[in-house]
Image 1 (tube, rainbow, N blue to C red):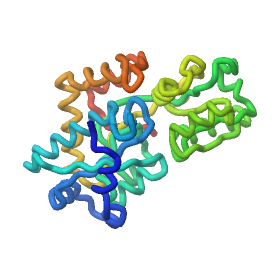
Image 2 (cartoon, rainbow, N blue to C red):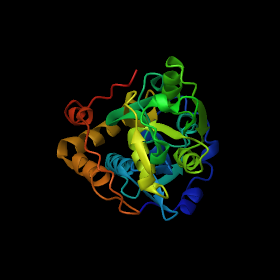
Image 3 (cartoon, rainbow, N blue to C red):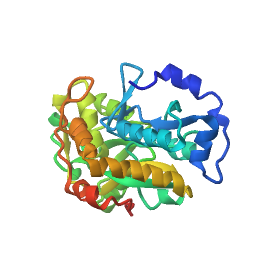
Image 4 (cartoon, rainbow, N blue to C red):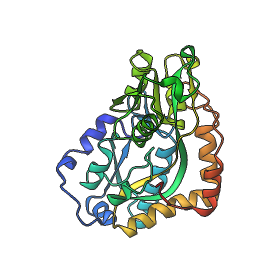
Length: 296
C-alpha cells in the first residue's frame, strides 16, 4: 500500500518551487532532505495506476520500490521518507528537470530526442503503437480509420507516430490529443473518437479498465517498437548506476520475471483482469544484455 494521495500532497509542500537542478546530484539531494520523491501515472495499467482513490500500484511501481530500497541501503537511511507525485505526458520531463521529483518509472519511452534532456535506465519493457476501437465499428486496419477521429495522449511518441503514418498514407486522420490515458479512453467510450492510438500494452490496460471490456479490441499492425525505462536527470552517473544496479539485480535474480508474470500474465487488481500478454522476445533478450539503448 503506497501513501494516500492526501499524504502525498502534504509531503510535497514546497517542492513545486524547488527551482532548476542545473547540476544533478540526486543522492546528495535525497540525503540532505532525507526524502526521495518519485512520480507515478494515475491510469497507466499495469505499469502505474491508482486503485480505491489512494493505492498506487503496478509493475513500474514495484520497480520503483526496488530502487528506493537500494537508495535506503546505500545512504544508510532505513527511515528514508518517500513522496509520490502524479505526472502526465506533458509534465513528466519538465518536473524532473526542475527538481520536483527524482525518479520516474512508468510508461515513458527511452528515445534519442528525450536523451538530450534526461537520462534513462536499463530498458524494462518494449511496446509498439497500435489502436483500441469498438468491435462493432469493424475497424481492422489503419486504412479503416481514414478521415476518422483518433484520440491519443498529448506529448506521447504515439501522437507523432500515428500522425506520420496518416500523412504518409494519405489517410487524413483527425487527431484528438487527450491529457492522459484515462481521458483517451473516455473519448472512445463517449463516441468522440473512433479509436485510441497508444502503445499496445497501454491499450490492453485501458481495455481492462473500460466499462465494457468485451466491446473493445486492439487492432492494427505494430507501427514502432519502443523501449520503456526509468527516467532520471542527466549527468548524474552515481544515481544512474544505482538505478541500473537495482534493475539488473531484479533481472539476474529472476525476480523481474516473477514481477512480469504477476502483472502481465495473472489477474490484476482491482477487477482481477487478465491481460494475458507474454514477455516479448525483445524483452527476454534484454534480461541478458541489460541495454539502455534508446529508440531512434
